[in-house]
Every structure is written in C-alpha cells, then in structure tokens.
Image (tube, rainbow, N blue to C red):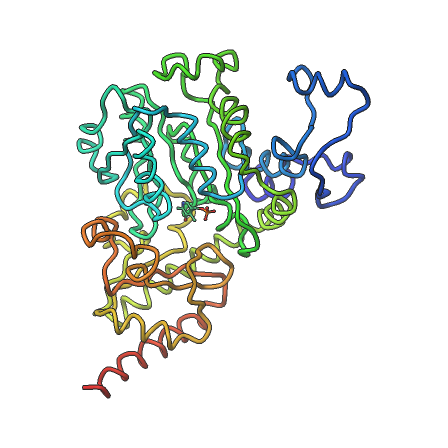
Length: 417
Ligand SMILES: *Cc1c(COP(=O)(O)O)cnc(C)c1O
C-alpha cells in the first residue's frame, strides 16, 4: 500500500467493526472476561487480549498499527502526549548514571525535560545536529542514545539521519529521532538507519488541533543483546522487539500516560488526510517564504525549501515530497514582530504548530522565555524572530494577510518617530 492508501485502509479490521467505515471508539476503562482462566492468561501474556485501557485499548491499537505502517516500523505505543512519548523512551533506555547525546535547538519541552532529568542522575550533552565530530566527542561508555529532531523546532535544521545512524551504530547505541515536524509523509527516519521514532501526534497527525497525544515506533533494527543496560536482560527474549516490549511492560504501564480512546479516534480521523494536508501546507509554506524573499528582502527568511537555506542540501537528501510547513522570519526588531502579529487578521497567535489553520508565535517571549540568551541563539531564536506554522488556507489569502500586517507594522513605526 502506498502512503495515502495506507492512511485510509491499514490497520483496521472492518469485519470486526460490523462494516463501519470508521473504527468504533471503545470508550471503556476495562474489559470483562468469560472465565477466571482467560483473564489470568491475558495477565500472564499467554493469550492476547485487553484488560484495562491504561495498558491497551482496541481503538488505540488501530491508531498504533496505522502509525507503525506509515513509519515503516515493527510496533508502536501511543501515549497521552508527545512529552509522555519522549519520557517513556528516555526512561526505557537509561538508568541513573547514564548519559544522552542530543542535538542543540530541540523543541523547548524536550530541552527542559533533558535538563530536569539531570536531578535523577541522567546527564545530557548537546552538540549541533550536523557537527558529527562534536556529537562523537560527547559519546562515552555511559552514553545510551543519540537524540535528534529530523527537522528542529524552531531552528529548522534538517538532520542527516544517515550520518548520525552511522555514528550510533559505531558506538552500539540507538538513534532516536523526533519526527514531529517532518511527519512520516516527508520522512521515515527508520529507513535511513534510525532505531526509534517519536511523533507528537498532537500536531500534523491529528491535524486539526483536537487532541494531545504522542506515539513511539520501534524500527526493530537494533541489536539489544549488545546494549549496555542490564535492565534489558529480561526483555531479550522478545528479540527485535525487546525495546518496545520493555517500554510497554514497564514505563508505559508505570507512568500511566496512556492515550484516551476518544483521542485515538480523533487521530485516526485526522490521519486520513495527513498526506493531502502536508502536500498543501508544504506548498503554501514555500510560496509564503518565496513571497517574503521577493517582496521584502530586508526580512531574513529561514525555510529548508529555499536554496539559500543552510540546510537545503540535507533537506534535499533526506526529505521527500516537500520541505515542511514551518518557516521563520526575522523582521528587524521585537517591536516590529509584535506589531506584525497584532495586525494579522486570519493568522492565529498561538503556541501550537501543525494545525490546518496558520499559526504564529514570537518564540523569544514565549516558548524560549526560560532559556538563556546563549541557549536561544543556539536554537536559532532571536528577539525579532517569528515562527509561522503554515496551514492549508488558500495561499493568496495568507499572503494578503501577511502583506497588510507587515505594512501596518512598518507604518506604525514611522508614526512614532
Ligand atoms: C509539540 C512537540 C513535542 C511535544 O509534544 P506534546 O504532544 O505537546 O506533548 C515534541 N517534539 C516536538 C518537535 C514538538 O513540536
């Protein structure tokens, strides 16, 4: 099945659903059984089945199966949020005393998470995503994983997954990739040698901003027998699936950040149009980026689809079918950035991304507020920078809105002078 067909048809048993074209929402906390023996067998994992929605639910399973299919992995686990997915992955791979090597300029929530777990004895070292020597220098015998974003938010560096996978393989540690911004439409990190993929499905996968969720996909392509973490010993019997088996049977269960069945359903609905939405949003983003460059050369535009973007070459090598739907612009000053935002009529001022609607934020005063100046600049965040998550509106309307808002922002300045 090709991508769009899989979105519509993979992972569902319509006979089981009495022919319904959409999956039933199993809105239940627990599952009743025919006999004491049956429930005992499910608990002992001798029989497949559900017992409690925190550890599994049929609607959630359909969502997980669809993601496994489109990420080209072996198995997935869905969680209550993208951050819960990240926490599950990190706690499954590390023990106190272990270390992580991560790229600079990560999504703010992830960055704060890595800083916070230092108090648990898990230390993270940072390096620029395409500085392979810098990354390798940070790896030592305590390192348990390399963590990167395929397209960084909001710096928009594109990770060369193949180069990074080579480093990870050499050191016998897994490469974990947050694929939220690229989505499985533009990139399947597992095909390029990554071992574990995380998606915050709150974003493009859900698509309409109707539910928070995350999902972890195991590529089944890492040899866990050689992994230097003894807490994997009990799970080696699962072979290729040792990681996802450990995750599902330990932290996913223990932390309890399970995906609600209703939210799984909303994600399944959203997934149907992921390909169409990404196609339109990527095309709109490229047109908006080009419009700014042509009409306002004083505005610094960062978008992986522009030939003068530092990451354009890697983007061409790694991404299929488009360059993502996020761009950033530097408009000259903090004041002008605020004035532009305040004059937009169509575009929402919002901290989210990946909606059908176009969204804008001023990162320095919001999502990067608690970072130091140096941390901000390493993430490509400047006082005059705006991040735009481009939606699927008619692009002429978007351009018109940015045109009038930018002109008004400039006009306001000349009046105060
Ligand atoms: C939003 C986001 C997350 C966190 O996901 P939530 O669903 O908000 O918890 C992680 N990584 C990236 C790149 C994101 O954009």
